[in-house]
Amino acid sequence: MIYFDNSATTAVLPRAAETAQKYMREQFFNPAAAYSPAVKLERDISSARGVIARELSCEPSEVFFTSCGTESNNTALFGALHALPSNLRGRGRVLISAVEHPSVYEPAMELREQCYDVQLVPVDNTGRVSAEALKSLLTPDTRLVSIMHVNNESGAINDIDALYSIIKNNAPDALLHVDGVQAFMKEPAVKCDMYSVSGHKLHAPKGVGALYVGKGVRVRPYLLGGGQESGFRSGTENVPGIAGFGAAAEMIKPGPFPVRDCLKDLILKEIPDVQINSPEGSCSSVLNVSFIGCRAEVLLHQLEQDGIYVSTGSACSSKDKGSHVLSAMGLSPEAIEGAIRFSFCRENTEEEMRAAVDKLKAYVTSQRNLRSAFRKR
Ligand code: PLP
Image (cartoon, rainbow, N blue to C red):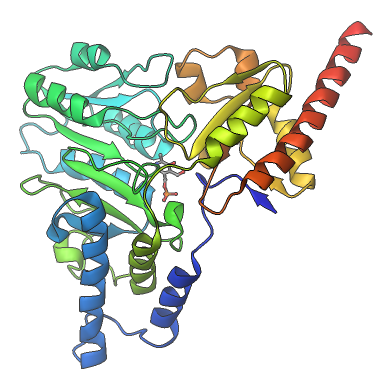
């Protein structure tokens, strides 16, 4: 198998799986119980929290475990606005970028139903939010801005520190939430009020994520009950997931993925009429390429027969008609139709890149030949 869909999910690292299993089979206690093996679990959760906090460059008390990136994003958007004083609730502006993941876009649309003035900040042709575009949409009554750090389809990286300064200078009451699901431990930590991460994108088990909430930022809890996570998120803690997340984060080496450029060079050398959609300087875990004159969905299934797994967009939007991300970047319908996302992990090798390009070249050529023969008829 050649797996190039690591932005959708990753294989769990053996050490993270062993850690999770230990907390499922042996130390399976409820951390709220009063006997000592259970009490110890609180310390194990704290140590995982410490690892995530270190990687986020924040205090452990600012990290709250959730079930996934989607929950972190929903909690940030709804929680921050529901925490507003009652005279401000349902009023004011909310900004999100035009290329956000559905787990930000859909809550934003729900906030529009709740009478917030929700606006989309456009991106330029490199997929990044421009400082000018953001500045022109900020108003004194802007309450919340949500902009992703790394885009899941293109790999484009937003300059979050610069956008943070613009927001604080032009709309001092606005909070900045950043969806960092595709950036965490790949790109350096940034300045913001809230930051979402997800374990399964980083070789941890599924079912665990985290939300950074800066000191003094008010977020109303979404799940009420037993008061776990300092009252921020009630529900018996997912100790196997949390400990597995901590173990994975301890093991992962931050830094670039050199295989991306190897694949890009091979594609450009071997296959004519391609368009690289990942901009210069984008996150090296993603390469988005349009094979002009081809249907990406057909290529995906052809590659699948050889045990090569790629994506035509984000996993969550792969059933949609076309990518809202690529269309916001101004790509032609033909380029969108032929766009494939390759996304990497540290185990991917140059040999895998070569094998994949050999197959791709054959499938792209045969699809183009078939289409032109069809057109001539
Ligand atoms: N945000 C981004 C940018 C993503 O790519 C994803 C998943 O693909 C999510 C959020 C949702 O994360 P999760 O699958 O952990 O809910």
